[in-house]
Length: 142
Image (cartoon, rainbow, N blue to C red; front, side, top):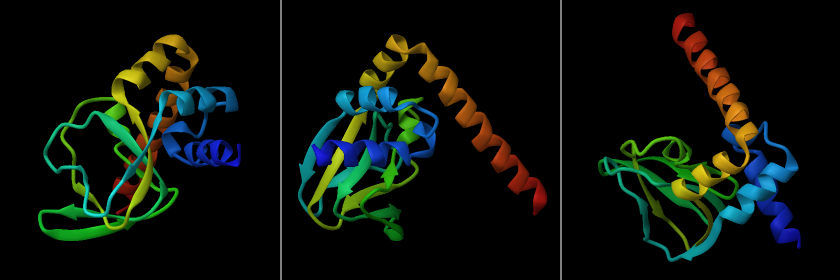
């Protein structure tokens, strides 16, 4: 059971999901799949449309733009959250640097949750508005 609680703790730390209740996070957790991937596995590819969100439960990954590594991701970090909202192109390629354990939430499953729990949509809109305001404030302060 601690593994499940850890999964929910990680989900709660994702800014997009930070306003969700424990019950709503549990629904997200149930709609997600855990997947083990080997070192070297390409998890998403720059320029290709995205269909899922990834949360790293264990292991490390490299974020690449072209052939250049621009960031490293580790346990508790995530990527692809905007793919839950649209199928826009991925902004970078992410490759497993080590064997990894991932929590994956697909766009179809996420849409089902939004249909099932309309209050989640409102919370997500508020969170996105807050992120946009923060982004605007940073842009105007430079």
